[in-house]
Amino acid sequence: MSDSAGVIVCRDVTKTYKNGSLEVQALRGVSFTIAAGEYVAIMGPSGSGKSTMMNLLGCLDRPTSGTYLLDGIDVGTLDDNALAAIRLRKLGFVFQGFNLLARTSALKNVALPLFYAGVPGPKRLAEAERRLTEVGLGDRAEHKPNELSGGQQQRVAIARALVNDPAVLLADEPTGNLDSQTSEEIMTLFARVNAGGRTIIMVTHDLEVARNAKRIIRMKDGVIVADEATLAVY
Amino acid sequence: MIGQIGQFFSEAFAVLYGNRIRSLLTILGLIIGVAAVIAIQILGHGMSGAVGGILGSLNDKSFFLFPNARQSDVTKSFIKIRDIEAVKLAVPNILSAVPAGSVQRRISVGHAHARLALSADSDVTFAAVPLIYGRNISKDDVATSAHVAVINDNAYHRLFPAGGDPTGTSIRVAERRFVVIGVQGKPTQGIIPVSFGGDVLIPYTTYEHEYLRSRPLFAARFVVADATRMADTESAVLDYFRKSKGGRVDYQTFDRKSFATSVDGIFGVLTLIVALIGAISLLVAGIGIMNIMLVSVTERTREIGVRKAIGATNFQVLAQFFVEALLLSLIGCGIGLAIGLTAGWAVNRFALVAISGIVAPIPWLQSVAIAVGFATLVTLLFGTYPAFRASRLDPIEALRYE
Image (tube, each protein chain N blue to C red):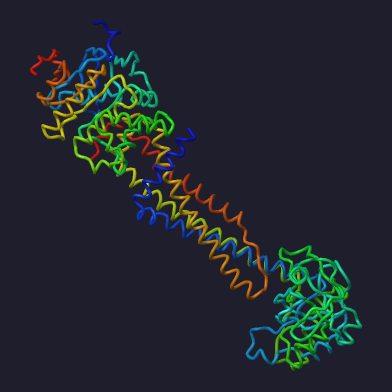
């Protein structure tokens, strides 16, 4: 496939962190393309650069050199506000620790991105409720995060990530805090979301989890060492 | 955007309510500071109202004489009726000398009644207020100890709520009846429309007969013919009294000019103190709020990271924390305003009014303006930095924060 067809296009991306006089090269030239609708797992040991990759893909940071195009937009040239807008409209985040706002109902957690997008109140809540129902938590809308199980919290987080209809769903160890059965439920949900046409990029160190993706990018020492389609074992 | 502001406020309220004990402790300084400033401000208003009322009804040809309080036996210096009769003859430039002070009586006309102050006056009135109806006390009234009365604006409105010319009407003072001969208009000077020491003026001869009998006076009121010789007349009167009492007593006088000067001095100091209290409480309360907001930002670093990852702009994060500080300040100043108004009103009502008989209007607008001003200033000075710090947090670092 050509570069322009990819929802995510990285060309020779490097990232160098400066800590005083010490320079750490976290990414040493990474190039890949992810097409719309793909389901990709990024794997690698700690220090491989996968977290840095995730931060760059998530527009939380800018590459030191190289180009990163998200949905055709060159992220490296954008200012903080424009990056925030990209995160709001084009990306949905799912974290290992769920990261829901405590003391805030599931419904309002899901509605939060809509608030930042300036959607008016009633429409916001209706949309959030629809998303919650999609992840099977329509009856838990008014529950606070501490009244929900880990799996339920992660599903609320997924609903929140999808509520602005992002181009890409980014997941950082989404099952890291969950038991195996709940992990499987979440992976089933991811498969369903991907089947609906949504691009998913997931960072994990767990091969079992990574196998749920259709493609695995392996990283080590800041470079890609393998990029291959997953052999369907299920 | 309007909807967003509302949402910021409701979210901020939820956060503050969730931490309500901490929120309350945070704004305690602000509550106390604002309450103190507003109460003192109302008190100052009430006092200047009382003084303004006194000054407003005292013309520049009048002065008072009273015993100096700093002497061993003040009772020896009490002024007798015959003393003021004698001084009129002995000292030139005196047109009138009458007992000062007043008595409180329940006065009624038909169904209307009020508790008002009666004072003595002569045919040469000390009042600075022109009449709107009738006439002043005449020589004849004085000579015959007539039961006639000139009422002031306050008495007029309370006894004759229907208005109209009341001259010739009888008013009942206990078992006595007085005929209204004149009505004073609103004072043109002074803030409060009252006469010094009296709502109802009666001839001093009548006053002596009815209310003093042979009891000594504490103070006397003089009217001079030539206001430019006021100071000379005052010292002549002082001399006369010292000599007549054998030099063992001391007196003092005051007139409009010297009174106004000393009152201005007192209020200058009071204003300075209020301003100082305001500044200090503002500083202390503001530091408290900034401290808690900084703690709150640190505690919620991860939350800030999440919000930014979700797509909140720096400005939206800034607005969230700024609104929280603003809401804290507004609530603190609002409670302070309520307490200050209540305290100021109560002190005015039960202390100042009891002393002076003057009800000063509460300066609502000024009080609300002070409270809102404080809230805005505290928020801008001390809420901006924590909010700015929150908005500048790096999302990656913030998300990693445990």
